[in-house]
Length: 242
Image (cartoon, rainbow, N blue to C red; front, top):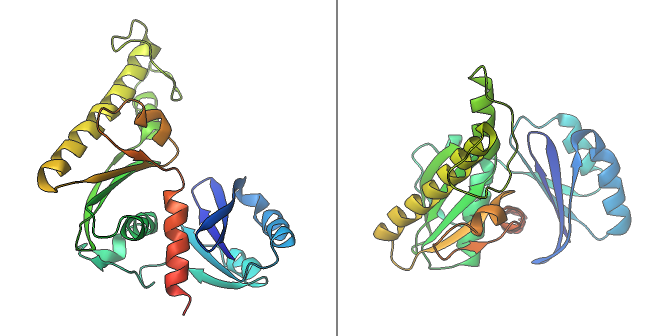
């Protein structure tokens, strides 16, 4: 069994895999890490390998705690990857994007795949049908757009994502929601259309926390998979075991 640990800016995600089968998917606050790890190994004592992916510098204590239970691979730019990486600055490529490209490579072999991750930032990652990672794009995510409007003005409130009833807002709040939601929706549609012009038979994967929300608003045919990053990390762990 494999354990995947994805450490974000505020939350930690945990996934237990038996080969490719996802058995557990849960989250916790960072201060709960040790408690959660102990609980997982009590329930799944056959876990013998783990991978840690962290968007920030990994506290040494995190590695020490986990390494008490099993072998640990810390994902980095020196980790082995199964695809050709044509990114011009691979040392600056986010580890989440490395994992998403891996999931695309294995899940859709010999296929043009665009992975769009609706996270803190919206990232676009392209793997072509030759198994080559080309790069993509990065733009502000949902919460970042709401925070920017609030923090960089005197009168706009801090809002969270909420459905809109009409494209035309008739209050400040509904105007802000319309701007964020329609702005992102149109960005996604436009980006997908650009990639479709360059790559035949393009498969589009929408993942991340807000994937389901925006998947319903897109006219393009896409696949929404909120577990795509975790699946990619599990593939990378298998690839780096030896």
